Length: 358
Ligand SMILES: C[S@@+](CC[C@H](N)C(=O)[O-])C[C@H]1O[C@@H](n2cnc3c(N)ncnc32)[C@H](O)[C@@H]1O
Image (cartoon, rainbow, N blue to C red; front, side):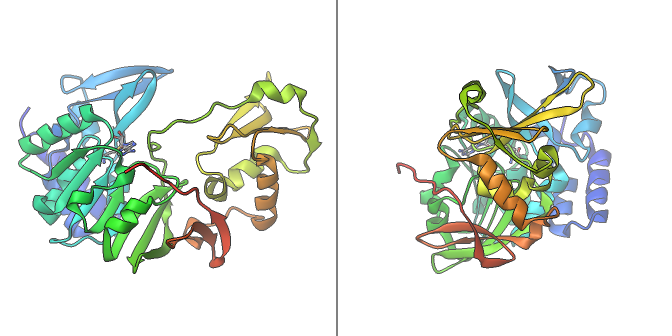
């Protein structure tokens, strides 16, 4: 397969994205950068089983040039890297408002396709991309070279940025963060823009004098989490806990409060238990520090761990009677504090500080 392959499909994807309102700088890049060079194979899940789709498989090229996220790496049974949905990538790139000549840092190289789009549109000497996984950065650098681009590709924890290449006018992250790391604040130029998945949203902040503020984009984002340890839920310990009661419809509350919960309880996860007829009988919620709660549909709630998670659900329920809009939330960062807020900066939740050995 060579670079000319898929030209018609590529142009058709670019037209679809242009019709959806994405900017010309990026739709032109989509029309010209060969995604199949960066995604020579991917994985599809069917009934819990992962199957590898290669360039020999029927429908491969059509899938690569569809507006679809493609899982490109699996470790154990867990997907660990993907090529994000092109429409979502362009939403982030449009929001980044990068111009040719801007120095850009991408956190989460993955396949290298997004770095290729940026190299194409902005000039590769201005692009730096970092991924934590050396297998990925080795492959991405080679594929970028094959496609004719030579951005700086580094291996490491992207939360540390890439000090040697700073300052950056733009920083874009394609793995979910619990907050904006202090290193990015130090490495961003004044007037710089940072676009990153935080919680279940895409935060866009503008940096000014060591501080930054901005709103979440209207579109949602479910990105792979930054790779870091996380505790397992402590359901086993709940049997010994004396229950409290709730008046909430627990499954409804978790669905309605999904967005603010991700800001108030970074890295939280949920699950449900179902009865014989498939109906939900209980929900579970837990956070990376091991705090765990369950709520039965009969109204009994049990909680263990350093944080009382159901108390947080109850507090958010009082604030949000209906599902809130993402773009009503914002993010503000000062040297002392970082917090997400709703409608005005006076409200909100402190996000966990990310401190790293540098
Ligand atoms: C959705 S994929 C990135 C897609 C990529 N931009 C592309 O165009 O193919 C998310 C990536 O974030 C990477 N990642 C996870 N934790 C990271 C970290 N701490 N620092 C840098 N990269 C990280 C993963 O290895 C994964 O490749």
